[in-house]
Image 1: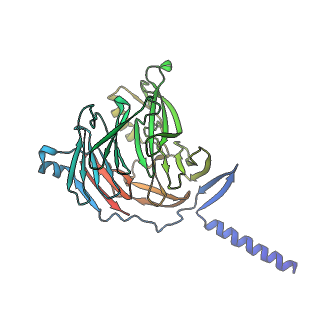
Image 2: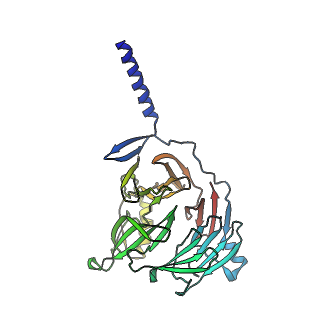
Image 3: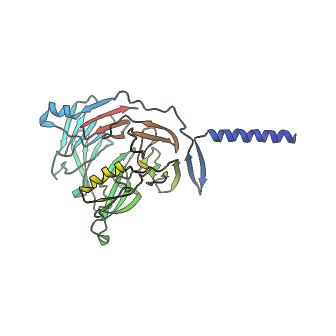
Length: 367
């Protein structure tokens, strides 16, 4: 009987060992925080994204040539819940609205500082049947309805609370505020990465850093647009921008860390060709590049299924647009999004949007 128990126990241990070996991840509990370590390949190798045919494609060049009096240059794109497309033309301070068939139905906004006018705007959001456009010089956000009618302004008394840059992330808006620190130098600024509710009230700061606009040395590991993503149950995903590790922290709205997501990563150096190209760009502003390795994570976003999409650093020779997809912290698969090097890829409402400001085109896909 004792031998039988030993044999059974050994069989169970063998089965558990095999099961663990076949898992693509392991889970640990560290001081009450769930740590998911993804290591042995994708959990769902069959996961794919169908991008054979876009639901809508707009060539703004052709539209402009057909109607030169109302030409449009794409700078930013938004969608509403009904599939209407809104295109921001920063040069003319106008927003062009197109219906789901691609027909232009409205142009609104205009250059100026009066009601419903704005200047030097490169982004906006359409959210809950409202169009929000920032006016940074006046510390205000201009509100329109989706028919382009001006509603009102939301004004801020402090630059630290004003989202100088913002973008939509599922049910909330992420925004960066900028606070000058003149006592530390004329170019010193504190950046706060904040989460805002649907009235653009600041809920919480999830990341803070400090940098000097006048520093002649440009750090290649400086994150220009740090971002967070929020699930439908209000868990906040924040990358660690680091050249050595691929890690994301997950918080609740109170700022309590609930999860840590890790994926195996080997740091990627900039090639000499990349460094030469970067330095040529920096030479225009008399800046010098500093750094040898890329940040592991470039950006993150969340799709309508509460799956986290992570764009990780790639070698210079890799020209494909690849995204790692995670569900509840578990790495599902890496998918390729068919996009050119000048394209910007984002999830807006329930669509996958690809737009190219350089070539003045956009399209979106159902998925």
